[in-house]
Figure: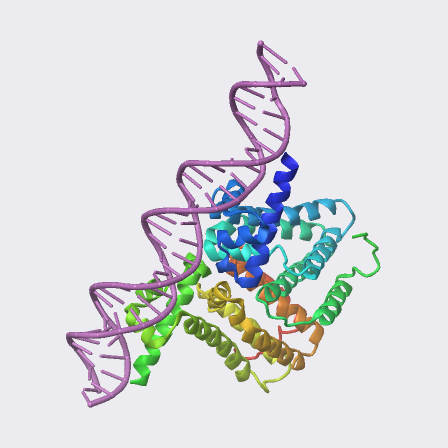
Length: 184
Length: 184
DNA sequence: ACTACTGTACCGTCCGGACGGTATTGTCAA
DNA sequence: TTGACAATACCGTCCGGACGGTACAGTAGT
């Protein structure tokens, strides 16, 4: 059944990124991922024919997630893209084990696997800028969010949850995103 | 002599971070690092008794570099810290192979190795804020710089050199760092 | 004589990946 | 409807290679 196959696939992907976060992006072995996902190594290899393919899927999954989020905010008024991007980042932050840790796993193995990320991120930034009332400030916010996340990915909690919330509020305030009630 | 020993040590550290950047943070083997640094494997292990110790040194080296830079800007007037932090980031960006890629190598192996980074970065942020005329905006800039660098580390060139320069100029402008001639 | 290495040989472990097997679930002709 | 077959969704094992680390003998500079 296609549904079951897809479920297992997602379980594996999630297991991989969880492991990447916990034991280090360079330490995810197929055995460990299989065990974590509750499938055998053979089963894992059935879904992803090689480790490289698994890592590529991890990257693709992340990118598609962001893109679909931005798509949903298309034509929803000025700054809607940026707004969506911010709340996406916040949601990812809430659930420990952000999807982005899969990116690090891919990077650890082979930097080339991240080639699509550059293109996509550039596209995200362009879309956010095009939709922003103050593109320059929007860029700053875009990079600030990345910075916040990168420190998160490095496992160093520079800001705690409350400070982060305050920071985001302040950022949104400067962006003029306070009044607009864009349903998230 | 301590001088020569120190030179070799630095050569090894630099080789390790260069390799981390080129072949992926998870792929630096002791053999490869030794070859790149132009020393034998025995020589490498003479300086760093284990891979873990090498990675710890990589992290420490990075942190000390940043800290000494901030120290130099202490008591150099308002916003001097932030200014120093910005130009440090820019310089690191110019030389390909930023020291920060050593952090990724450490992370790939064991997230725990980055424990000191969290403490230090928090300290950096606090010092920058304490010295800034607009602490809130300084925080935003701090994270934006991290975001810029993280995308750089991920090997995705979201902004090219010129765009980055423009971005930094704009950021400095908003921070009111235009007029002050703080010697870098 | 000591420091700072080089070079070689080697060991144990871990990991990616190939492979052979298997149970379950459709699919379709007679 | 049933028997024949095949595709799907796995499991368990095994192997070759890479890697971290050890040991040790030698050596050039100071």
